[in-house]
Amino acid sequence: MELPEYKMSYALNGISAVTNLFSVFEASIGHINMLPYSLLVMLDPSDKNRNVVNSAWWFNPVDERSQKAAHDWNDFIKCYGEVNDVVSKHDWIMDWRNAGSHRTVQACVFGVRPNTETMLEAMVLPGWKHANMKGIPEYEVNLRRAGQWCATIYFGKGENRAFVATIHGSDGKHWLDKQNLSYHPTQEIPNYIIVDQNGKWFRNGKGRQDSNKDMDSDKK
Image (cartoon, rainbow, N blue to C red; front, side):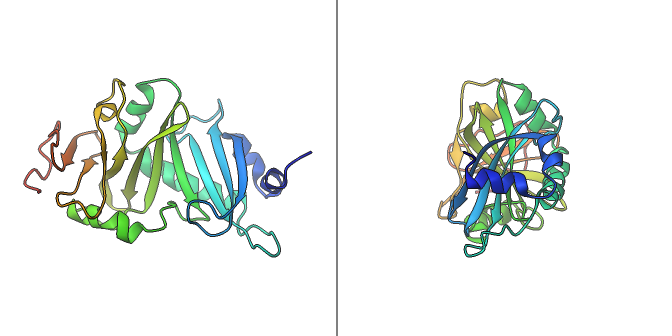
């Protein structure tokens, strides 16, 4: 018997474009991650997906009475494409993916919004501003090793650098694998990493490992 959340997922317009790029790993419905009532679909990469951002989770708002989803897969694909266009300018992201097996770069989409953080202004924007980054942290991606979340990174329009808010280190070969940090706006010395499109990075915070580039090194 097909579960209703899977049935809803496959009934949405545009499903064929999605199955060319992804496999549906999991679907659920409810109040998840402090977001409004939504259909959550976890998408793993298919062999045909050659994009830098090769996986996704999509929270599609659903009316609780009618059980009608607010968006279809065409809306998701448009938003996902925008995320991939932004992230693919950062060569170091693909370098990280290639540095180990079973690594994925996951787009985080709520409706047609390219992030799922419910407290973006309070929890991420202060660090973004501290790093003198332009605009706002609009695009959110997760990095995963063998399906396990290990990092959250933000990107913005008109900003060539990325903001690494959280990274859990491992024994991997990439420089990012050797980092361990979690940004929080209450930190006396904000702990984050900023990375330009070529992979030159600077870590701010206590016990920081200053980088392969002296990037805003006067920060405290």
